[in-house]
Image (cartoon, rainbow, N blue to C red):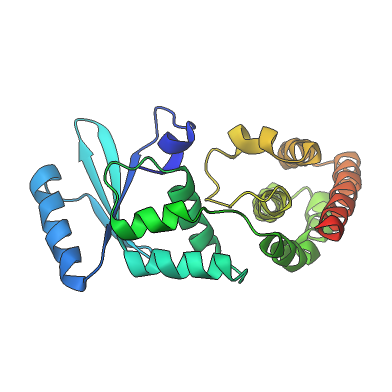
Length: 232
């Protein structure tokens, strides 16, 4: 079991996230059929590229069961050990393995777990250098001058995701989606929480003063990020 329940972040709206690994293509169909026998017909099936997510609902409880080829896990772990750049999808996979609650573990998964899953310095540096140029308020200047609420909120959401990607990389925490973010802010740099709150304030109260304050704190965050990769 992974997701918010394994992290202790679940609320009344959370589903239960489970993952079942398989080795051969035929195993996927066997597992899928067994799940249908237990849960009934799925409410939704989504191809997540590195896995298939099957959604069920029983007595008001929602379940998401990921069917994942063990080879996908091995490839993500090998990329991690080689200090190669990891996609956010692979980061989410590795984080769920790291914090997951295992009810039954295959020999392959035991080996992956036994080797440990640690966030590499090189990954932190790579993500920060990739996203740092996007850490800017330039997209806000015209919408704030016009009082264009829609575009201010759109740019706030885009910038928030950039900030969370950078903040997780700075703290060397695998980025595992953008849910329950407010509960995670205390684990990140203090300046991130300030910027987070200023983005929310700017979305509803779009003044030049709020934009200047946001710009000032983003410059502080940039300096912190550059310092952190200089020390890595």
